[in-house]
Image (cartoon, rainbow, N blue to C red; front, top):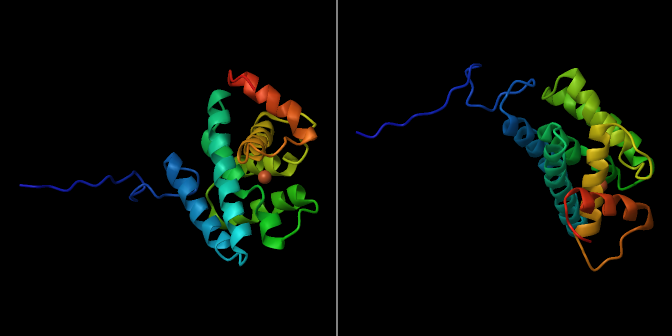
Amino acid sequence: MLRHFSIVYKDGSGGESINGKGNAMSRLKELRKYIDKKLNKMEDEDKRTGAIAHLYGVSLAAQMIAKKRNLDPELAAMAAMLHDMHAYKTGSYDDHAHLGADYARNVLTKLELTTPEETDIICSAIYHHDDKLNVDGPMDEVLKDADVIHHCMNDMSKPIKEKEQARFDRLMKEFGIES
Ligand SMILES: [Fe+2]
């Protein structure tokens, strides 16, 4: 006889729980669902495709970097998914990092996916992510580096921006890659 088993978590859900207690991927999935809906509203097809590629690309890179540095890859990925959303929403990069941190705080407060401490970590990373020439906290640095990886490797035919070159070189060294 065939039996079907399903996993039921302690909170009685199927693992899609929120409030900082769910399994790692379900929170990221929940956030991505929200962000996907917002991105899908972008009318310009090229900009929409570019935004999706960038946020998912930075999110993947952020997970790898966080893992390498013994930081929380899930939080890193969540910060990455949110980091340029304000710019995509408004169509402007003016002060987008600082305004994006406020945007992220609103989203995270609404979705109740994170503890207040986790929300602060994510928002700090977004707030600082445009300061590529400064060194900030460990998670702030993960997001900056992940952003730089995507900027430099998404289209290898493009020259690397001057303000990102040193950071990119350091990253390649950290990952043991000859550039
Ligand atoms: Fe970015």
